[in-house]
Structure formats: C-alpha cells, structure tokens
Length: 240
Image 1 (spheres, rainbow, N blue to C red):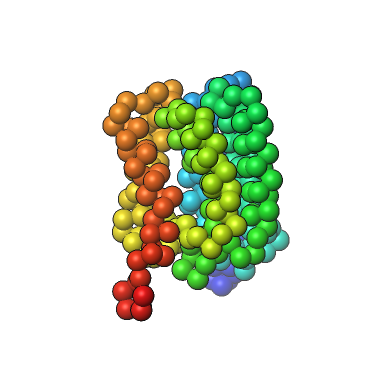
Image 2: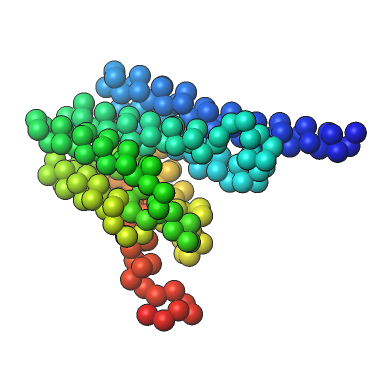
C-alpha cells in the first residue's frame, strides 16, 4: 500500500509538471492577444511569465522524472511547441507590427527570425557538453523586449537580428544560466537582474528610467556574450 501511494504521488507530481509546462500555451495566447492590440507592455508581461515558467519546469521535470512517471506526455515536444510560440513567433510578430522597423526591414526581420529559428529548434546539435547552447538559442523574446524598452535605431535592430540568426548556425557558445555550471554564480544573478529589469520595464509601459534601462542592457549583454567569452578564456585545469 505504501509503495502504491508513493507511485501515485510520483505520477501526480510528474503530471503537475506537464500541466505547468502547458500553461505556457495559455500565456502565449494572452501575449498574442495583447500584441494584436498593440499593447506591448502587457504582451511583455505575459511573455515574461511564460519565460519564468519555462525556467522552472525543466528542473522540476528532471527532479520528478516525468519520462518515467508520466511517459504518456512528451515533455520535450510540449516544451518545444510552447518555446516556438513564446520565444520566436510572438516576438517576431510584435517586432514586425511595432514602429521600430520601417518598411522592408520589418519584413526581413520577421522572415529571418521565423525561418532560421524553425531550423534551429529542430537541430539535434544545439546542446553542448556543458549544457550550453551551440549557436544563438533563438531567445528572441529577450531581444525584442530589450528593443521595446530601449528603442535603438532600426539599423542596430536589423544588424542584431541578422547577426543572431547567423550565429545560430555557428559553433559559438551561448550559456544556459541555470544549467551551465561554469560561472553560474555570476550567470544566475545576472539572469535574475534581467528578469527584474524586464518586469520593471513592462510595468513602466516600456519607458523605463536610466537605471532600469542600464540594468537591462548590461545583463542582456552579459547573457549574450559570456558563452563566447568562456570559449576564449580556457577553463582552469585545461590547456589553452
């Protein structure tokens, strides 16, 4: 009886993780509805909530071993489906419909983002041995939110979009702030700084003051380039 209870508890916990992951689809729909109405701050809030859920459900899935206790649902497929919506499709739509990109630049960005990201999401080589990503991990939700908050010149946006799209198919490394162990004591706080700054920027209708903008810019730059820096700087105990 005790073993049965343990088994039932394990299955319930695993199912809870799958249901938590599935809430990302709800937040994606809410973000899309806000984007259609041009409510970029509200869209950013829902995308940020989906981003937090995506950061939490992975560790929970590993802890409660969902592949063993709830194998009828493929968590990987579910996660990829929601990630494409929240990380790629909705941010690309928002960037296209905003006033940040005039004329042809909007078309270039939305087509480049959706096409290259679809290929990248299906790439079996995207993970490295240290749990980082090989190539830019298509986190367009993060970039687009920064674009909305800082409103850079459209040439800068165009250059960053094309540069990141190309980087998806290179051996350049991009960290996973939680799973990449090297410099994790810095990376995780930087991730929290980014999340707090992004939340404050959305709360302030994407017109934050210099402190929030600075924190958002610095943390974004760190998360974007630290993996490449790790490739340049040899790990302790290895030969250069």
